[in-house]
Length: 294
Image (spheres, rainbow, N blue to C red):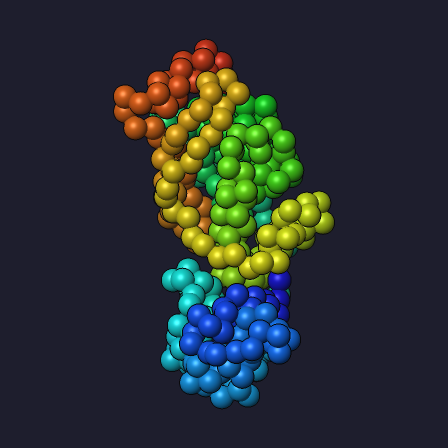
């Protein structure tokens, strides 16, 4: 993913989304040839030169100031997440040759924490959405059709974004699939802006763009949004409808791994359903034989 072309595409998509009348411009709709604002109009409203702004849309952002980026963000009515994304694209990390993807693993302490969370579905994810580890209830909630050991094999481990578009059983968990898909792509966009040299991430986006027209269409719209906590509605094949809260907790280290947990409000039907699911999975907890001593 080339940060310079991403910057231009992002600015064009946001410029096209702003209607002239929303920013006080009187226009004759029949005479307009572009959707949204023209470059000249945006530059005028933001108080920057058309030459300067054109360079940005061409991906030439060297030396751009905070004041210019902030003015453009205000004019385009960008959210905080979108403004942060604009900064990431305009000021990518020092360019270096993308390294060959290296398999990541959850740390022993993270695995120990997962195992201790017997009543809370939990997973350890990398920044791309690969499942590095899960506890028994996390697997039972999201991917009971997959082997418990699936995250242990880097080449075949589950990826929550890929599953959302390509795995029918995982996709069926979400009654409002369109909203979940939009959020997943928006979150991945934010990560891609911060890690333009991540070859594994670029490969994931490339494969999904080829394998899923729905993903490709969403990705082309450049949605950007962070998602650290919130609620999810699931329809589980074993226990029915669940209304759950989720939290993403960043784990120490430079790799961007995170722990995601799901909980239900005590005393609700969702709490009862989650407890039922925990009870049905307790009997199939994976067995780890004690090591042989010599």
